[in-house]
Image 1 (cartoon, one colour):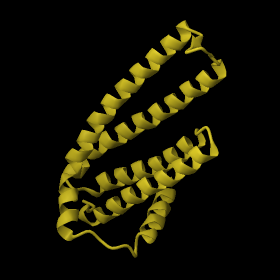
Image 2 (cartoon, rainbow, N blue to C red; image 1 turned 60 degrees about the vertical axis):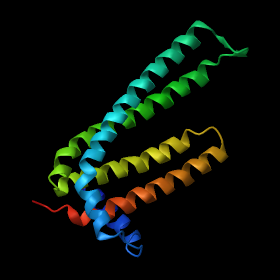
Image 3 (cartoon, rainbow, N blue to C red; image 1 turned 90 degrees about the horizontal axis):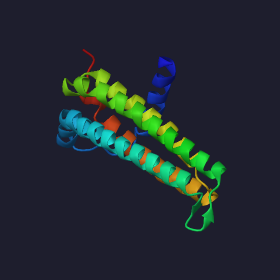
Length: 170
């Protein structure tokens, strides 16, 4: 598996070779402060997970108690797919939170292990964008999910590879 991660890293690095770079002061600031930004991300993601779980349980309780929601017949097939979709999203978030929480200490000490964990999270995000787009209900939704997901991934990859040189193997 490490072989594939290294190939993916080389591939993304090759794509970003010709792009302009951020100022050295900017990359240094991001590199030194990425650990607490990651910590804030972990905290906010945990709060988001709790709200998602509460929302899912509330929606299921409401739909289970009333088979006609606003005059429309309740379809168990649609709700089961919606529940599956939500659970998949929550599972991706749990894995992302686990990876991010593992990355905080190495990022604080500026170790390459922290950057490697962030790159693995980037690869997880690539998978999530594709899976999320496949769950869209229309071709337009699929196209927009892929386009905006790709834009977000490109920005993430750019920032991630801009700070790579600050994280050294120790």
